[in-house]
Length: 607
Image (cartoon, rainbow, N blue to C red):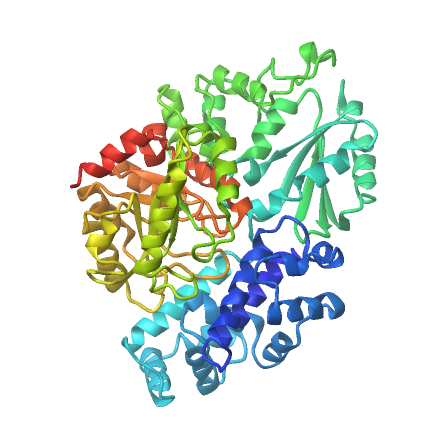
């Protein structure tokens, strides 16, 4: 996890240096370097050792110096100096809150805060909002909101920090799965290992990795001693760092292990007899399992506290003649005997899916291949590193009908936004590109900053000429809910904007969501026939499944995009599709499942 740890440190340093004499270019490079660290699939140690570091975006100047220091010493001096004064959580809150270094450090100093617990304690004090207001004012800082807003924002930022403390972005964890699965697969007698738990349910962030393991020695009966020996062998795998504990039951043995990747793995040893049931139970969720157990009990299929349904063994007749590769076939047998449709893992959260399955009314979930194109991509015209060759290659590989290049607008300095002249040059460039291709179309777009109520970064006469116009807020973390909501709703009311990008502004572990009434935004989108984005970048995944479900239920189209800035970001669309599937979305609910002609017709309906 060194890449993610370093990326967080870089964003913290960049945030803290914004109010110093460091140039904006240096800060922009740190931000770029942080994104590079998050996105590269190789460990930073491997990249540095191979001499490739300076080839990567943002990895020059200060960023290169800091990484070199980290590789050589295991720490970064300027960050350690900060940690000697403030607990790391307090440093992280500077960026999470959006307040900036000067405000937060002034608050810490005036209130004598040295730890997160100190801060939480002070926030319970009488008149704390007024005290924070006076601290900011007395330090000659801009006080644009009342004191209660500042106190509430800090509280919400702390709540967000604590809510993700032991979680990891799923995409980051999945980078290690091949090595883990192939590692245990090389142990003699292991027939198969499959991912279960929250990873199989495609949650956007996970606490650990759960793997269900099928060994040959559990073919005819469960051999507890051999299962324990297998867990002992796991300790020798090169990615295992420490043994955490073992859970032994009559027909189940599980061991938890710490790994050098920084995340825990639980290996659960199954058997041929119980393979189907074990997949079901270890996938979860607990609430979902409890709901189907209630049905099983009524039908007489519960025994010794578990669902017992014959015919779900992992091999024909339980004799090991032929191992089936489609593990869901065993679960389908269980669901079928309970009188239920097969419920895909993404829906197993007790959100009404069991009741729908009982009525044969589950949604026909969206599939990745239903997507016709990506409508949010940044290129070298602004802060992306994607070349036109990268983009064309992705279009052809995914058989897209279209892809929109949507670089930033001029108000986004750190995003190197395009002024009107540059936008005109880009429009001509894309027009010339499209003359070369017949099977797809590059759409001219922009991600346009929402600057205030009724204020967006380009005038209407420019926006209406764009193929795709995204409205996004990038600097609204210092606004109360009413102001942010009014800004977003006013943007939705502009007939030339097509959808709102990353509507809550959250960046996993780095930015708490800004205050916004998401239901009012959804209502406005419904009234104005606008879409809301599910941003597939693995650190965003915004909207989440709860809000995507709300939007769909109110008739709002969702649009699933990557917000790509790097070539490998283009392949993250599946993460957004997973959010849509967890929200129960079908093909008809998603804007970019439309053909190009249908998409343009949808847009023209507003003019």
